[in-house]
Length: 422
Image 1 (tube, rainbow, N blue to C red):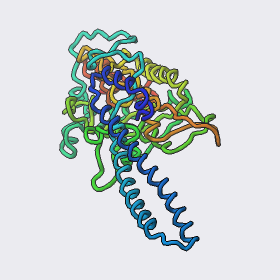
Image 2 (tube, one colour):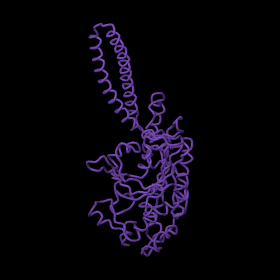
Image 3 (cartoon, rainbow, N blue to C red):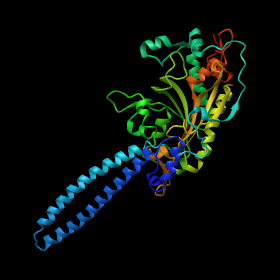
Image 4 (tube, helix red, strand yellow):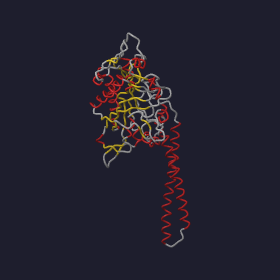
């Protein structure tokens, strides 16, 4: 959430930023108008409270003098009625204003390229040379089925499209990717955290775009609980309404979780594939830092992800995500896109964001010294490994002409002796 003071004092900053994203200023104008009305009601309330104090004093003095204070008492009753009425209206306006305010996206970093969609993302660098196959690369879902390690048919029977039974070597590969990523991050002093897989709406509103409640997340019927879409959300929200000791920053965490997403809309869901699933496992990187250090840590997060993919021997590129593709919460985002020989292009595997103080303001997460000044932290997140997408890349890049799949060397210590999926 943006600072309302900035909107009051420098609305042009927000207006220009919205135009970069290709958005209108309609929402901003509504927030400004609602804020103006709210402040007018606050002023009226304060004036009435002042008058109430004056009348209270007059009544006390009149009673001491034995004078009739009926008129003043009646005025006091009317003032109390008006204050109660204005209090109710003030709370309604504040709630409406903040709901609108939470829909205004974060202020973009100057280095974010201007563009309409993912075609306008700017490539920063590439690593690895895509393998030249002498045979036609098979679809990863069909290959997994032929090897008996992926079962979409039975999953669809009991859960519908977008789910899979991972079996045998593919189930081990999923867990090997998790253990490998955890191992790499522990070496870099990230603390492993296994969070709750459900969150209440109040903390959830602090970490995500409000539209995600309808478009992305699963709600538990008749409960104030939502299934998490990524471990970033519970790991950041765990510090809601807290002041973190300055010496404790940065806080670096390695989130380990299953993730649940509707993934509706233009993306759709793979009928027999792993790329976009309703349920998948992921290891996430989270950092809470001082504002002046967050851009340095943003680079650290993408570097960590790159090192994981380099050790997996998977060719990739890193792109700076453009204004039209970046989403609401991030001020800047990198995507790491892994090479897909089947599609002959790079496909998204990692998302790495600096959310600056946007989530922290919504969640009221601050840092400082005890009894001293406090400030909002900056929150950052990045995929370390999303196992489903990494498995797509491995099944495609490491498949052999005879229909087998070679396990990347970095994962073999976690595969219980399996070097090749046969």
